[in-house]
Length: 203
Image 1: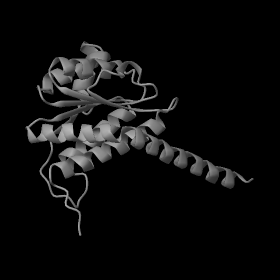
Image 2: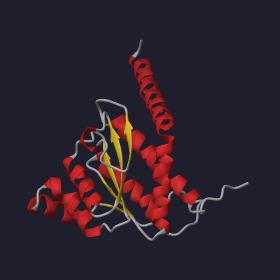
Image 3: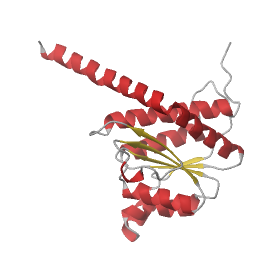
Image 4: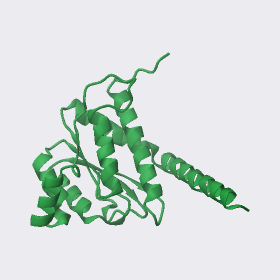
């Protein structure tokens, strides 16, 4: 077997495993995904907003999803901006919080600043053990926010903390979990647009 053939087989192995994992998550959690979307749609209808947070790749996913809500998800859907904030995007706040309060408190502090009763907090953590996300979710609940979590592995410390949660059953590396998380996020936005009446498929 040549190196080229070996690498081509590796591409198939990785991508097909990712597809099977997404299928498993979809079959096990379709009702939860719909519930998460309905919670978001109702929150937007009531004038609330969504706060996302995560670390590393999960911070990138949080920023990605918040942007698709505030700007747009697909060009074919005309709708108003939907209020969403990724708490990892303000470097001054992050560095001040980490320096003055300790990194584990930085997202909780931002939830305190921006969160209001009736808003939604969405925590992303591939391990479920990110202390900064754990503390932020606990703070969000104390402030009267609705909460949801996208987790991986066995759910870690965050398992059972949120009102709604999805755990991607993949142990080890974060990459496959993050691929599922962003897919779930895209489905959530698609459903929210439909529930709010903005999505009108062409006949």
